[in-house]
Each structure stands twice: as structure tokens, then as C-alpha cells.
Image 1 (tube, rainbow, N blue to C red):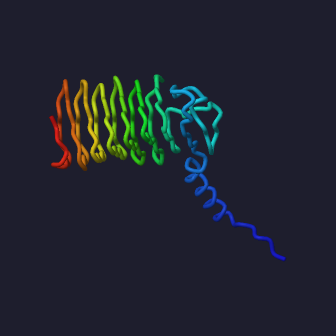
Image 2: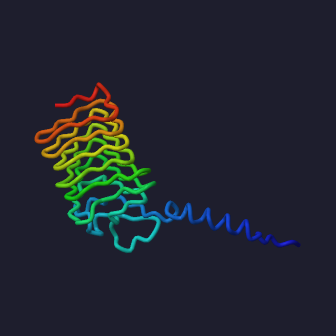
Image 3: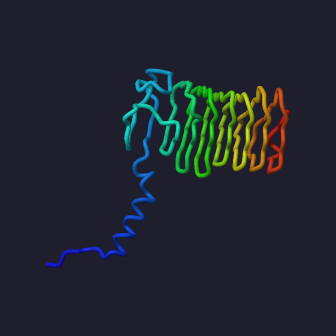
Length: 193
């Protein structure tokens, strides 16, 4: 009986495939429990996949983090939704007292939720989708990629709303103290005031 023994080329290819898939294979996935509203309290989370040693999501999200309950993030480092990372807020309030960076290939989704961010910057280099939700922002919004609204609104307490990418769907953008700058694509069904 012959035993399969991969050649050096096949071993290298398998190793490269393992490295490329590694972050996705071992990404941590978290979901809120409702037992605490503090992001950095392990009681607030259930975790699956990957190394769950801290008991709460790292500020660099490479897996899926689902907020089904109200959560407050008081951490100093900004929350970074990395490539293949997904942050979902579902019928909850998410208070983030830091920056939120949605990196290229990262995704942020909120449905029937209220999201407060700042003081700081919201950088969208990935995908942001808001459905029947309100984002209250203290500081600048910089959209370099894609924001899709479906019956959703932004309310900027201070700072500028800068659209260099695509702003699509239906909803509204309100800037209380700052400017609105559009150098990208702005759907005419999104009101601004």
C-alpha cells in the first residue's frame, strides 16, 4: 500500500493556504449576554472560536461581534473592525467613547439601534450599513468607502461629515456644529440639514 507524501511544492502551497486562512479560522466570535453593559466585563459576553482568554472582545475585531444588549465601551484604544471583521448592533444601544475605524474589508451593521461615538473620529474604509438606526457622533465622520442608510440618520453634535465614497439609501444627515463636505456619491434620497 502506498502512503501519500506531499512534495515540497504541495507542502509550501498548503502552508501558504493555512497562513492566508489563519485569521478567519481562529477569529474570536462574541455575543452579548445581557448580564453586564461594560464591554470589558467578561460577564457581558459569550465567546466561541479562537483564544477567548480575556473573556471580552479585543479592540481589534477580526471575527464577528454581535451586540444584542446595550454595551458601553470606555477603552482608550479605538475599536478597529479589521478585514473580515464584523461588528453588529441589533436592537441595542452601543456607546463608544473612542474612535471607531471600519477598515477595508471590515463591516459594521446596526438594525433598530442607537449608536453613539466619540468624542473622536468615525473612519469608514469598509462597509457601514444602518437600518432604522440613529448614529449620534461627537467628532468627524470620514467616509472613504460605503455607508448605506435604510430609514436611518446621523446626528453630528460637532465635527464635519466628510463623504469621499458612496452614501446610499434613505435617511438623513444632520450637522449641528460643523460642515458637510461631499466629494463622493450622495444618494438624493438622503436628506442633509
